[in-house]
Image 1 (tube, rainbow, N blue to C red):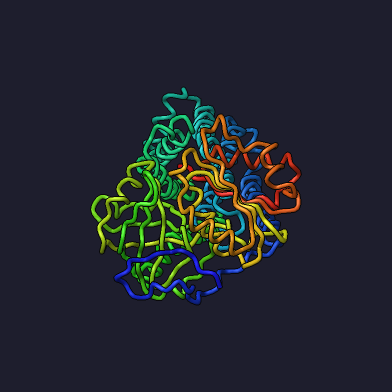
Image 2: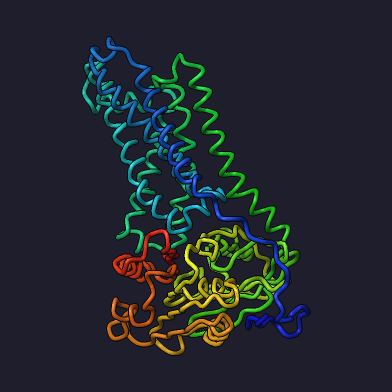
Length: 464
């Protein structure tokens, strides 16, 4: 078997180029899981609307403010339900994560994102209007009465404020001006916001007051959601980190502004991971221990070694290049469906730009000999072609073809003409695309116009 040029420190044992036996990755989810998941989400939404409808009577609609209070209750419950769905999307449930992949999760998160906050703001405004109509008082006066006179309303108001702030900083024009660390901390407040909002729903919601069964069901749904988050976002990462006990053994420059971090650990042969996947890495050193960042593996594990490769594009990635050997590492993952297990056709074309070569390189290593891939690598300069010799050897061993497109973006284009020339049979191949967000979006649109069906297009974008 042709070896991969994954060099580890020469003074360390176990540097053989013969791949170690690894645990097989988790199988791809069955096709029926997606429609079933959508059906369950739809049924949950229907049940939420049903709770609001069954809690009202015609006499309540006829009373002053009755219609507004009903609409406010409806928008509030639906908004909270959609917020729970969003939490589940980012809770790293393995089957959901493998089904949608990182880009799919981010896409659904962005589509759903405006709805919970908008509905909850509408809920606060409409309910207050309804109470003002019922009490025959002014709206401003009623705001003070609702916030200070109703149980749990002060903390619920704080929770809504945190949601609004998180939504505002997630607007692309604002988010692009913030560091990832600042955005992440603000976004993390959504967990606190939902926790603060729970009590007032149970205490004041018409669907729950005097309805102990619905109150218990709603409480169990929230408790289950919180349990999933705790297990998959906190408990499992701790268990995996303790199992593998990774630590940094070398920081190796690869290209201008690009370094590889070589980690050593134990039991890496048991790590069920596929080429193309990524981990969230938490480096347990001063100033970095409190945040985890996603970085792709740039090679399959070589027990007892694991390699990630990082480009300096922000405060955290710049700090990675200054890590000291011996630094302990905690991990979450592996994540991502950008793997060979997503492939539908017999052959594939792999397209990468910039630091997207990291995921493509480990994916390429995971392809079987004789896979005949066509690999297209885009870079602005020759020195930016990271892992050039490794990729060349991997493509050769798999009887594929490598095309390097080097030069300024306005001169060296990856357009329709280029793709048809380099990959004449692209319509019969799976297409894997990895790189900056704008590059991935452009290529996904382009291959769609070339007749590649959506299910045969797999992509991973590097963005905030």
